[in-house]
Length: 330
Image 1 (cartoon, rainbow, N blue to C red):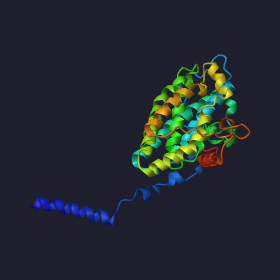
Image 2: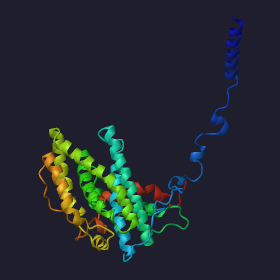
Image 3: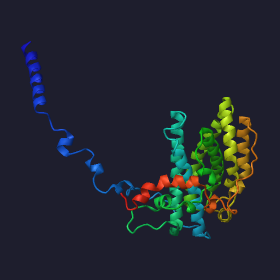
Image 4: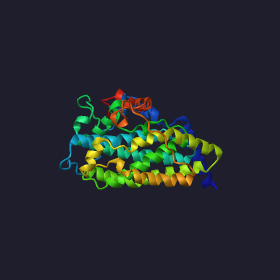
């Protein structure tokens, strides 16, 4: 087979040539593949500049008879609950009991982060005065400025969301209480006269329904599982439940905006939330807790900017890159 032998010889000759004259590698030809990443000012990693306006296409006009500052404060309350809870859930990434729960917790964190972004943008649009001052020409959008450049005392979240994750039982109880109240509020907020709040709530109801049902299923599973899972759940209930009452306190801003047809007074959803939680407790075989509500500092609580050290530590980690590179862009 002379033709086949010739073909084989040709391939062999090519291999010899390649070994003696190798083609330049991408690194040799163009320099290190990392040169483009490492060169220049590292602050370009801090922020993006090509994000679309999260409120594009939505009517952001202030409803008649509504104080823009009150609307901004109300949006910050809802946003900060979601932002801090999202950050806590995100800390479970790669640490959850198994891969399925790892993905579920991460997805819930993303849901809440999306809600937070829209609500922070709404707060800034309603009252630009709430946005922290930044260097002239900074590329940071208003919602990022509110997330990354406010001190802990300017956050308006309830204290429940800032609690350390603890074990899986603690996170389950936290998520059950938060999502039960937030879902009941969002169901009513869909009828808000503010178009942004109504749109956020309409999308958020489906997300929060999953969050609540996920937490409820795990609450029952842990309660009816092994003696160890029951011990951990009982300890989590005792630890977390004192923070529950703060979720249902109607702050003056919430009461005023509820009367204006814009917001929801959380006190008005108490019966609905209690009924849902009662069903979960009964299915789990857990007695309804009746702890004394957590006291505030001189009557002031999370909505007033009074927080535990846990929030300061969380924000220090969350905000460190942005604060180091306030003019960063990429």
